[in-house]
Length: 209
Image (tube, rainbow, N blue to C red; front, top):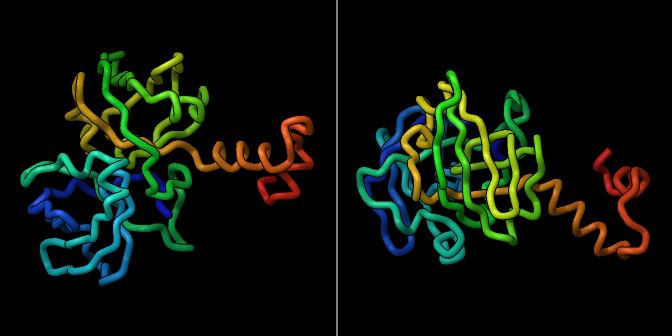
């Protein structure tokens, strides 16, 4: 599990059919084989690590659902180690299980902020809510506007400087992960039957409250 607060930008060294090697610094500290690292929002398992890089397995499902398969040596990626019990949770609960990809429609300056609008598939946009949380390339962000097939987020200067989102332009593909709570609520509704609907008692019964 991750928080969506990026620790550093890594550089892709090699992308193979079943693995990816990324140059890094901060995330290598105390990292060992079998640990999890979020690479632009995708949770990957470390299989090799040295003083300057790590290599992680990449499953076919990951390549199908994310943009990792399109990465080439030299590309930069957002990196975050899994949270620990003592970690400050500055963002939201991010699992690193990418739901799919979106396409940046525009990036517009608004005083110090940058408003990014992302075109989103129908099977993902249904889980996006106004003022809700969403992970874009692994970055925890708050939704500021939502339309039928897109949503917008506001990027502060720090986010633009410390993540790959500052380099994103119209047409850029990004990994998307919706707030896991939205998926569980839908599943609970399905299990309990549509006639009952969602109630506070139902949320409490299943540990959400």
